[in-house]
Image (cartoon, rainbow, N blue to C red; front, side, top):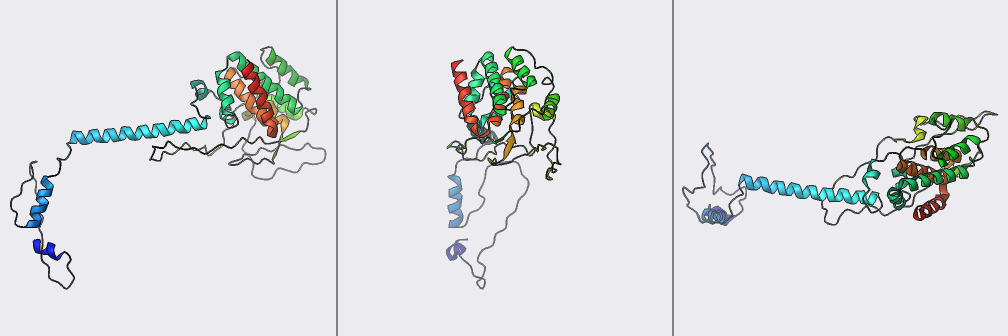
Length: 312
Protein backbone atom coordinates (compact mmCIF):
# COMPACT_ATOMS: atom_id res chain seq x y z
CA UNK A 1 0.00 0.00 0.00
CA UNK A 2 2.81 2.44 0.86
CA UNK A 3 4.73 1.69 -2.33
CA UNK A 4 1.61 2.16 -4.45
CA UNK A 5 0.91 5.41 -2.64
CA UNK A 6 4.41 6.70 -3.42
CA UNK A 7 4.04 5.80 -7.07
CA UNK A 8 0.58 7.43 -7.14
CA UNK A 9 -0.25 6.76 -10.78
CA UNK A 10 0.21 3.44 -12.59
CA UNK A 11 0.52 3.35 -16.37
CA UNK A 12 -0.88 0.49 -18.42
CA UNK A 13 2.54 -1.06 -19.10
CA UNK A 14 3.69 -0.92 -15.45
CA UNK A 15 3.25 -3.79 -12.99
CA UNK A 16 0.43 -3.76 -10.45
CA UNK A 17 1.77 -2.95 -6.96
CA UNK A 18 -1.29 -3.45 -4.72
CA UNK A 19 -4.53 -5.43 -4.68
CA UNK A 20 -7.29 -5.53 -2.04
CA UNK A 21 -9.94 -8.04 -1.05
CA UNK A 22 -13.09 -6.77 0.65
CA UNK A 23 -15.27 -9.31 2.47
CA UNK A 24 -18.60 -8.73 4.24
CA UNK A 25 -20.55 -11.07 6.51
CA UNK A 26 -23.56 -10.83 8.85
CA UNK A 27 -22.76 -9.94 12.45
CA UNK A 28 -24.36 -8.11 15.40
CA UNK A 29 -23.70 -4.35 15.53
CA UNK A 30 -20.33 -3.57 17.16
CA UNK A 31 -17.71 -0.79 17.21
CA UNK A 32 -15.07 -0.70 14.49
CA UNK A 33 -11.95 -2.76 15.30
CA UNK A 34 -8.59 -2.85 13.52
CA UNK A 35 -7.39 -6.48 13.41
CA UNK A 36 -4.10 -5.92 11.56
CA UNK A 37 -2.30 -2.83 10.30
CA UNK A 38 0.94 -3.06 8.30
CA UNK A 39 1.37 0.24 6.39
CA UNK A 40 1.83 3.93 7.12
CA UNK A 41 -0.96 4.79 4.70
CA UNK A 42 -3.41 2.61 6.62
CA UNK A 43 -2.24 4.12 9.90
CA UNK A 44 -2.88 7.63 8.57
CA UNK A 45 -6.45 6.90 7.52
CA UNK A 46 -7.27 4.92 10.65
CA UNK A 47 -6.08 7.85 12.75
CA UNK A 48 -8.15 10.26 10.63
CA UNK A 49 -11.24 8.09 11.11
CA UNK A 50 -10.74 7.94 14.90
CA UNK A 51 -10.69 11.74 15.10
CA UNK A 52 -14.05 12.15 13.36
CA UNK A 53 -17.11 12.94 15.49
CA UNK A 54 -19.47 10.10 16.20
CA UNK A 55 -22.19 9.69 13.59
CA UNK A 56 -25.66 10.89 14.58
CA UNK A 57 -27.99 8.43 16.18
CA UNK A 58 -31.22 7.48 14.38
CA UNK A 59 -33.12 9.78 16.74
CA UNK A 60 -30.73 12.67 15.98
CA UNK A 61 -31.04 12.08 12.23
CA UNK A 62 -34.83 12.05 12.49
CA UNK A 63 -34.81 15.31 14.47
CA UNK A 64 -32.46 16.96 11.97
CA UNK A 65 -34.74 15.91 9.11
CA UNK A 66 -37.76 17.25 10.98
CA UNK A 67 -36.09 20.61 11.60
CA UNK A 68 -35.05 20.85 7.94
CA UNK A 69 -38.59 20.04 6.84
CA UNK A 70 -40.05 22.69 9.18
CA UNK A 71 -37.60 25.28 7.88
CA UNK A 72 -38.50 24.43 4.28
CA UNK A 73 -42.22 24.66 5.06
CA UNK A 74 -41.69 28.05 6.71
CA UNK A 75 -39.84 29.35 3.65
CA UNK A 76 -42.60 28.11 1.35
CA UNK A 77 -45.32 29.62 3.56
CA UNK A 78 -43.55 32.98 3.67
CA UNK A 79 -43.25 32.92 -0.12
CA UNK A 80 -46.93 32.01 -0.49
CA UNK A 81 -48.00 34.84 1.82
CA UNK A 82 -45.73 37.30 0.02
CA UNK A 83 -47.25 36.30 -3.32
CA UNK A 84 -50.74 36.65 -1.89
CA UNK A 85 -49.96 40.14 -0.58
CA UNK A 86 -48.58 41.05 -4.02
CA UNK A 87 -51.80 39.83 -5.65
CA UNK A 88 -53.93 41.82 -3.22
CA UNK A 89 -52.06 45.10 -3.55
CA UNK A 90 -49.57 44.79 -0.71
CA UNK A 91 -51.79 43.45 2.06
CA UNK A 92 -53.46 40.18 2.94
CA UNK A 93 -57.18 39.90 2.18
CA UNK A 94 -59.74 39.60 4.91
CA UNK A 95 -61.73 36.45 5.41
CA UNK A 96 -64.72 38.11 3.73
CA UNK A 97 -62.67 38.86 0.61
CA UNK A 98 -61.34 35.31 0.54
CA UNK A 99 -64.83 33.86 0.68
CA UNK A 100 -66.82 36.31 -1.44
CA UNK A 101 -67.81 35.06 -4.87
CA UNK A 102 -68.32 37.10 -8.00
CA UNK A 103 -65.78 39.34 -9.70
CA UNK A 104 -63.58 40.39 -6.79
CA UNK A 105 -60.40 39.41 -8.63
CA UNK A 106 -61.57 41.21 -11.74
CA UNK A 107 -61.74 44.49 -9.85
CA UNK A 108 -58.58 43.68 -7.91
CA UNK A 109 -56.31 44.19 -10.94
CA UNK A 110 -57.74 47.67 -11.50
CA UNK A 111 -57.69 49.08 -7.97
CA UNK A 112 -56.72 46.80 -5.07
CA UNK A 113 -56.90 49.68 -2.57
CA UNK A 114 -60.53 50.27 -3.53
CA UNK A 115 -61.30 46.58 -3.07
CA UNK A 116 -60.00 46.74 0.50
CA UNK A 117 -61.87 50.01 1.12
CA UNK A 118 -65.14 48.46 -0.03
CA UNK A 119 -64.45 45.44 2.16
CA UNK A 120 -63.88 47.67 5.21
CA UNK A 121 -67.05 49.69 4.58
CA UNK A 122 -70.36 49.10 6.32
CA UNK A 123 -73.10 47.12 4.55
CA UNK A 124 -74.98 50.38 4.00
CA UNK A 125 -71.96 51.97 2.31
CA UNK A 126 -71.49 48.85 0.20
CA UNK A 127 -75.11 49.08 -0.97
CA UNK A 128 -74.71 52.76 -1.78
CA UNK A 129 -71.53 51.97 -3.74
CA UNK A 130 -73.28 49.21 -5.68
CA UNK A 131 -76.20 51.48 -6.57
CA UNK A 132 -73.88 54.30 -7.65
CA UNK A 133 -71.86 51.95 -9.87
CA UNK A 134 -75.00 50.48 -11.44
CA UNK A 135 -76.45 53.93 -12.12
CA UNK A 136 -73.22 55.27 -13.62
CA UNK A 137 -72.83 52.21 -15.84
CA UNK A 138 -76.40 52.52 -17.16
CA UNK A 139 -75.95 56.25 -17.72
CA UNK A 140 -72.72 55.71 -19.64
CA UNK A 141 -74.38 53.09 -21.83
CA UNK A 142 -77.51 55.18 -22.44
CA UNK A 143 -79.85 52.72 -20.72
CA UNK A 144 -81.47 54.95 -18.11
CA UNK A 145 -84.18 56.10 -20.56
CA UNK A 146 -85.50 52.54 -20.84
CA UNK A 147 -88.50 52.08 -18.54
CA UNK A 148 -87.49 48.60 -17.35
CA UNK A 149 -83.93 49.74 -16.58
CA UNK A 150 -85.22 52.81 -14.75
CA UNK A 151 -87.59 50.58 -12.76
CA UNK A 152 -84.65 48.41 -11.75
CA UNK A 153 -82.62 51.39 -10.54
CA UNK A 154 -85.62 52.65 -8.57
CA UNK A 155 -86.06 49.25 -6.95
CA UNK A 156 -82.41 49.22 -5.91
CA UNK A 157 -82.75 52.72 -4.46
CA UNK A 158 -85.77 51.68 -2.42
CA UNK A 159 -84.21 48.40 -1.30
CA UNK A 160 -86.70 46.23 -3.20
CA UNK A 161 -86.00 43.16 -5.37
CA UNK A 162 -85.48 43.82 -9.06
CA UNK A 163 -88.71 43.77 -11.07
CA UNK A 164 -89.33 41.71 -14.20
CA UNK A 165 -87.48 41.09 -16.48
CA UNK A 166 -84.46 41.94 -14.33
CA UNK A 167 -85.40 39.37 -11.70
CA UNK A 168 -84.35 36.62 -14.13
CA UNK A 169 -80.87 37.08 -15.70
CA UNK A 170 -81.80 35.08 -18.79
CA UNK A 171 -84.90 37.22 -19.38
CA UNK A 172 -82.91 40.38 -18.74
CA UNK A 173 -80.41 39.51 -21.46
CA UNK A 174 -83.20 38.63 -23.88
CA UNK A 175 -84.92 41.93 -23.12
CA UNK A 176 -81.70 43.79 -23.86
CA UNK A 177 -81.40 42.01 -27.21
CA UNK A 178 -85.04 42.57 -28.15
CA UNK A 179 -85.48 46.21 -27.12
CA UNK A 180 -84.97 48.40 -30.22
CA UNK A 181 -84.37 51.44 -28.01
CA UNK A 182 -81.06 50.06 -26.72
CA UNK A 183 -78.33 52.40 -28.03
CA UNK A 184 -75.75 50.98 -30.39
CA UNK A 185 -72.72 52.13 -28.43
CA UNK A 186 -69.30 50.55 -28.16
CA UNK A 187 -66.44 51.12 -25.81
CA UNK A 188 -62.80 50.04 -25.80
CA UNK A 189 -61.73 47.43 -23.30
CA UNK A 190 -60.67 48.67 -19.90
CA UNK A 191 -56.98 47.87 -19.53
CA UNK A 192 -55.75 47.67 -15.91
CA UNK A 193 -52.56 49.48 -14.94
CA UNK A 194 -49.35 47.50 -15.01
CA UNK A 195 -47.66 46.67 -11.75
CA UNK A 196 -44.12 45.49 -10.93
CA UNK A 197 -43.54 41.73 -11.06
CA UNK A 198 -43.62 39.62 -7.94
CA UNK A 199 -40.40 39.59 -5.93
CA UNK A 200 -40.04 36.62 -3.56
CA UNK A 201 -38.63 37.15 -0.06
CA UNK A 202 -34.88 37.75 -0.10
CA UNK A 203 -34.07 34.73 2.11
CA UNK A 204 -36.12 32.37 -0.05
CA UNK A 205 -33.66 30.16 -1.96
CA UNK A 206 -36.21 27.56 -3.02
CA UNK A 207 -38.70 27.61 -5.82
CA UNK A 208 -42.34 27.25 -4.88
CA UNK A 209 -44.64 27.15 -7.90
CA UNK A 210 -47.24 29.88 -7.77
CA UNK A 211 -50.87 29.06 -8.56
CA UNK A 212 -51.46 28.97 -12.30
CA UNK A 213 -54.54 30.42 -13.94
CA UNK A 214 -57.17 27.92 -14.90
CA UNK A 215 -56.78 26.55 -18.40
CA UNK A 216 -60.47 27.25 -19.07
CA UNK A 217 -62.10 30.60 -18.46
CA UNK A 218 -64.64 30.59 -15.64
CA UNK A 219 -67.44 33.07 -16.18
CA UNK A 220 -69.35 34.14 -13.08
CA UNK A 221 -72.13 36.55 -12.35
CA UNK A 222 -75.34 37.24 -14.26
CA UNK A 223 -73.68 36.87 -17.68
CA UNK A 224 -73.03 33.18 -17.05
CA UNK A 225 -76.69 32.39 -17.71
CA UNK A 226 -76.41 32.96 -21.45
CA UNK A 227 -72.73 32.42 -22.16
CA UNK A 228 -71.84 29.59 -24.50
CA UNK A 229 -68.37 28.35 -25.48
CA UNK A 230 -66.89 30.69 -28.10
CA UNK A 231 -66.95 29.56 -31.69
CA UNK A 232 -63.56 29.83 -33.34
CA UNK A 233 -65.21 30.42 -36.69
CA UNK A 234 -65.86 33.96 -37.85
CA UNK A 235 -69.30 35.34 -36.93
CA UNK A 236 -71.89 35.17 -39.71
CA UNK A 237 -72.31 38.22 -41.89
CA UNK A 238 -75.62 39.94 -41.08
CA UNK A 239 -78.18 40.06 -43.84
CA UNK A 240 -79.92 43.30 -44.83
CA UNK A 241 -82.40 44.28 -42.14
CA UNK A 242 -80.79 42.10 -39.47
CA UNK A 243 -79.09 43.47 -36.38
CA UNK A 244 -75.36 42.98 -36.00
CA UNK A 245 -74.70 39.88 -33.86
CA UNK A 246 -72.57 40.21 -30.76
CA UNK A 247 -69.55 37.95 -30.48
CA UNK A 248 -68.09 36.65 -27.26
CA UNK A 249 -64.29 36.84 -27.15
CA UNK A 250 -61.98 35.18 -24.65
CA UNK A 251 -58.62 36.89 -24.23
CA UNK A 252 -55.52 35.32 -22.71
CA UNK A 253 -52.50 37.48 -21.90
CA UNK A 254 -52.41 41.18 -22.75
CA UNK A 255 -55.77 42.82 -23.50
CA UNK A 256 -56.34 44.35 -26.91
CA UNK A 257 -57.16 47.98 -26.15
CA UNK A 258 -58.38 48.53 -29.72
CA UNK A 259 -61.17 45.94 -29.43
CA UNK A 260 -64.58 47.59 -29.15
CA UNK A 261 -67.24 46.14 -26.85
CA UNK A 262 -71.02 46.67 -26.74
CA UNK A 263 -71.43 49.19 -23.92
CA UNK A 264 -75.05 48.25 -23.03
CA UNK A 265 -73.98 44.61 -22.68
CA UNK A 266 -71.13 45.68 -20.40
CA UNK A 267 -73.45 47.85 -18.29
CA UNK A 268 -76.33 45.42 -17.65
CA UNK A 269 -74.28 43.18 -15.27
CA UNK A 270 -73.71 46.23 -13.05
CA UNK A 271 -77.45 46.54 -12.49
CA UNK A 272 -77.90 42.80 -11.94
CA UNK A 273 -74.83 42.55 -9.72
CA UNK A 274 -75.95 45.43 -7.49
CA UNK A 275 -78.96 43.34 -6.46
CA UNK A 276 -76.85 40.51 -4.98
CA UNK A 277 -77.91 39.45 -1.48
CA UNK A 278 -74.40 39.93 -0.05
CA UNK A 279 -73.68 43.70 0.10
CA UNK A 280 -69.94 43.13 -0.38
CA UNK A 281 -70.44 41.01 -3.48
CA UNK A 282 -73.03 43.46 -4.79
CA UNK A 283 -70.58 46.36 -4.52
CA UNK A 284 -67.64 44.47 -6.02
CA UNK A 285 -69.67 43.02 -8.90
CA UNK A 286 -71.37 46.32 -9.70
CA UNK A 287 -68.15 48.34 -9.63
CA UNK A 288 -66.29 45.81 -11.77
CA UNK A 289 -69.10 45.73 -14.35
CA UNK A 290 -69.19 49.53 -14.36
CA UNK A 291 -65.43 49.58 -15.02
CA UNK A 292 -65.92 47.44 -18.12
CA UNK A 293 -68.85 49.64 -19.18
CA UNK A 294 -66.70 52.77 -18.92
CA UNK A 295 -63.90 51.10 -20.87
CA UNK A 296 -60.89 53.31 -21.42
CA UNK A 297 -62.43 56.02 -19.20
CA UNK A 298 -62.80 53.76 -16.16
CA UNK A 299 -60.51 55.93 -14.01
CA UNK A 300 -63.21 58.62 -13.99
CA UNK A 301 -65.65 56.15 -12.45
CA UNK A 302 -63.18 54.80 -9.91
CA UNK A 303 -62.28 58.30 -8.75
CA UNK A 304 -65.95 58.99 -7.99
CA UNK A 305 -66.37 55.63 -6.26
CA UNK A 306 -63.32 56.30 -4.07
CA UNK A 307 -64.65 59.74 -3.12
CA UNK A 308 -68.05 58.34 -2.14
CA UNK A 309 -66.48 55.58 -0.04
CA UNK A 310 -64.30 58.10 1.78
CA UNK A 311 -67.22 60.46 2.44
CA UNK A 312 -69.45 57.66 3.74
